[in-house]
Length: 178
Ligand code: SME
Image 1: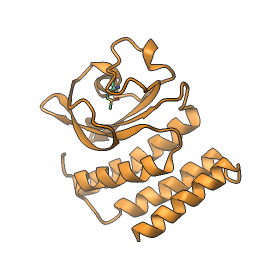
Image 2 (image 1 turned 180 degrees about the vertical axis):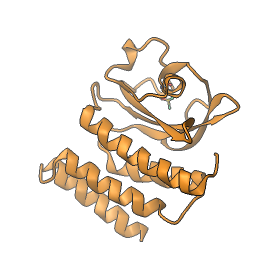
Image 3 (image 1 turned 45 degrees about the horizontal axis):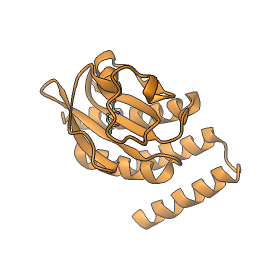
Image 4 (image 1 turned 60 degrees about the vertical axis):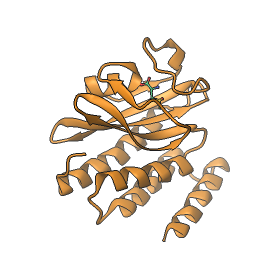
């Protein structure tokens, strides 16, 4: 099953690079794959781990991708792909803490222009952080970093928010706090 996923991902990448599929189509397919991956599983950590692996391998020009969970009013490092990262981030601090505090997606074209950006990896230049909600509360955030300035546009944001929304529906079905 996972081998088939891997083959699919590689084919999308080739198709996207050769412009056979649009970015919208790419994200539609990625959403289908995400739903299939988490369907029938309610353990949030296991689903965060597999979503991280799926997205990290599917997205181009991404050097870090993963979740931070809200634990005791702090963000704590969760399942991720990439180099080792900062473990604890106070709510309201950095791009991740701002997304969690304001409950809004933060799409940053140049992290060096973001006041308070936390540089876990000095090579990161752009970042998108999407809050994960359950019953109106932020229970985690999805953080994606890139070394390419302006890596994420509105289409990336829409596609990634749809994927996070599918995860939120899965969490609501399981009603398990992380
Ligand atoms: N850059 C983030 C910190 C997390 S790392 O990028 C993995 C921030 O400013 O919140």
